[in-house]
Image (cartoon, rainbow, N blue to C red; front, side):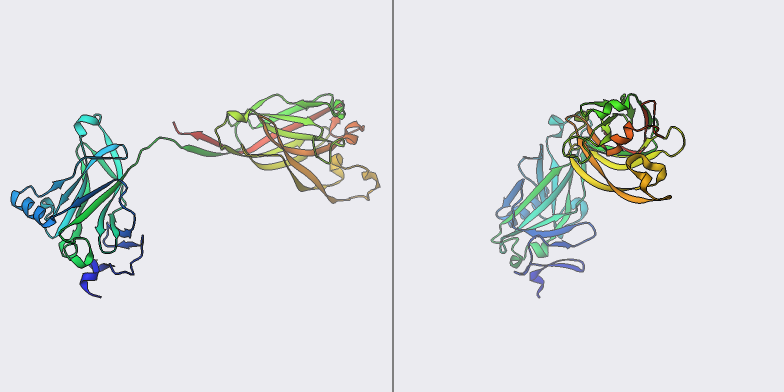
Length: 384
């Protein structure tokens, strides 16, 4: 392959043959990346005819540079600044130099202004009908003391002037730029995972439990606060499709008025519900790890619980079982979705037969004590 079919910078080269792949990236130096693509620059294009005449006149006049007309991109006004013979301040007389400058800074920008921009330069390959793109991928900070950024060694003259490379044909060439301003809207979130949050325990004494044998009856606890959110417990007969309807009591933890939370909210909650043994320490514990969210819908899940003689709470006719019996039983856990509340719970914490039976470890004087302990919670706050 001849030199005329390559773009080289040190030991690295770009093939300009027909085999070049659109959008393939090439690293030419430690700070500039070049690629090719078919699409024209999105923001501004500058075509130069009689390029050699422009170079000669600028060199003779000592002006050295050509500034484009002002154009607008990403909400600001800019100019392209081209040094056909290289930037004399950088002693780059063997290269083209191209810069992007912010325009009209004194008239349109406030005191202490600052603009963060990411830009890409283009040189049109007229033979391949493609654009060579040149960028360093670094967000540049424009301010009153730094109004232009760019590439002082855009292309070597030996490459640019060689007609076989397609950049300069019949003394005509095309340059371009895309510029994207990084605007911080100061939007974001701060996620905190809280272990054993303060005030995470709540005790509820349910009076007149036998009234819940009526399928029209239900009761709710007082509202309590954990993790800057309000919660409550509810106890009632399972509703809807549950196979436990008319047979058992259901217990749920509700997130109150979730409609006030932002769209797409999610909240991880780890909690334990205790049905207390009021004579001893054989409490009935139910532990959950759940993700509350605004997309929650009604669903039913099966789970397993081990029952022993000490936990006769949810099993009937245990007297016929041998001493020391132990078995695995399937129980339902389902998500109860209220219009404004989100809740997870247990569709069968206790059979109605047990509610009515006396004596009972868990029910004394028609009273049931339930404790809810939040052991883990995710809290999301918006950035101010």
